[in-house]
Every structure is written in C-alpha cells, then in structure tokens.
Length: 183
Length: 84
Image (cartoon, rainbow over all chains, first blue to last red; front, side):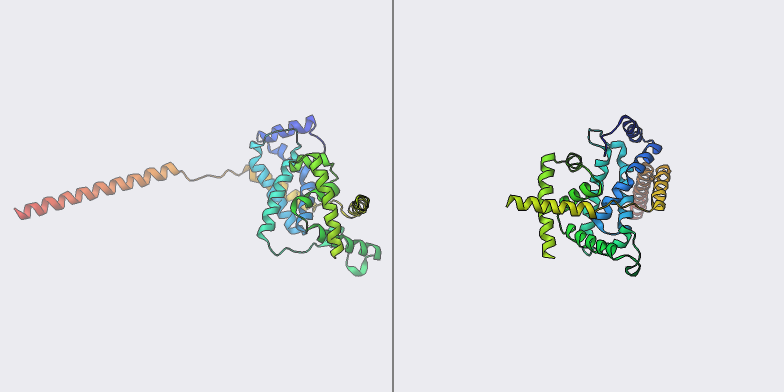
C-alpha cells in the first residue's frame, strides 16, 4: 500500500465532493484487497462478495463525511470491512468451512497432482487454525501475508503503533503454532 | 527459550508466506458491483413530506373539534328550548 500520492489525493478530494467517477476509481483500486481480506476472514466466496458489496455501499454513503489524514484511504475501507466481518461472525454462529477449491482454483481431487493436493490440505489446516485466533490477530496475519503490508501500514489500519503490531504479530505466530500442535 | 520462540516464529513465517496468497474476486462481480454503486448513486430517494402530513392531520383534528363543539351547541340549544 502506498502513502497517498498527489493523484490519489485529488481523486479522493473529488470523491469526497460527491464525484461518482472518482469514487469508481477508488473502488477499482481497492476492491481486490478488500475482497481478499473478507474472503480469508469468512471462508467463502458468497459471503466475501456480499460483504465486499456492503463495504463499498457503506463507503459511498459516508464518503462525503470522510476526514483526510496521513493514513491511506484503504485503511478506512479495511476498518469498515473489519467491523462488518465482526458483525457477520456475531450473527452467524454456524460458520461454513473454507472452500479451498475456490481459493486455489483447483479441480477435483482426482485430477490434481499430489503436491497440489497436499498444499491444499496444508492451507485448509492453516486457515482453520487462523480462524481460531481473535479477530485482531487474524487481521494482522491477513494484512501481513496476503496483502504484503509492513507493520507500520498495518498499524495505520488498526490504529496501533508499529511496535504494538510487531508484538501482536509475534504472539500471534506463537499462538498459531500452539493451535497447529493441538491438531 | 527465546531461541526456540525465534525458531518457531521463523518456521511459521515461512509457512504463512508460502501458503497465504491474495484471492481475486470474479471479474463479473467487480463489474456488476461497480455498476450497482454508480447507478445507486443516481437514484434519488423521495422521502414523504412530513410537513404536509402534519398539516393535513392537524387540519382534520381542528375541523373535527369545531364540528363536535358546533353539534354540542346545537344539541344544547335544542334541549334548552325543549325544557322551556
């Protein structure tokens, strides 16, 4: 994630003033990131699409009240996504398992090579363990590995200092190891 | 103990790096949502005119009250005449 460049800044200004075309550009820049984050948090494509749509509908509704800071615009979207996912988890006690086939774009078990099948199984076990973690720790892992963000960028999104993110990340890895050992 | 933690951290880091990859949404979904967002922005929602509703209800109540008073007076006048 880049710190807002002048061009992005102008687009954001236009979007805040109600320019739909500018909002469309912000949407195009961020939709894949937000979808990916929600997909890893919910575990299925249907919910990921539904919640992604809700994130951008909410963003569009409130964009005129958006207050510009040094934090990238995507941080605001991630926070909306984080809150919606939290509500979704609260409302859905019975959560569906991750359709890994969608994630890895693999065929059926019979027509995929053994190494890919093993990787699929490994991802499945890992994601089950990740979802046992508290939501802020899941967020750290997804932003760090899926979105490839630095601790500073993750801190901007989560409203924490770089040091706090580093410490949270360290504890998360140890907890994750424990969950995997339990398995 | 610290070395053990660092070793675990390193192994987990490598594992997560290898297994967690970005997931792309369906391109049709992206296009449809964009269209939906823009078209939604163009829809103007007309809220009911609450002032008009209040005026109509208020007028109705006032007319009703006047009618009740008027009918009451007529009845009183008629019954008063009958008593006399």
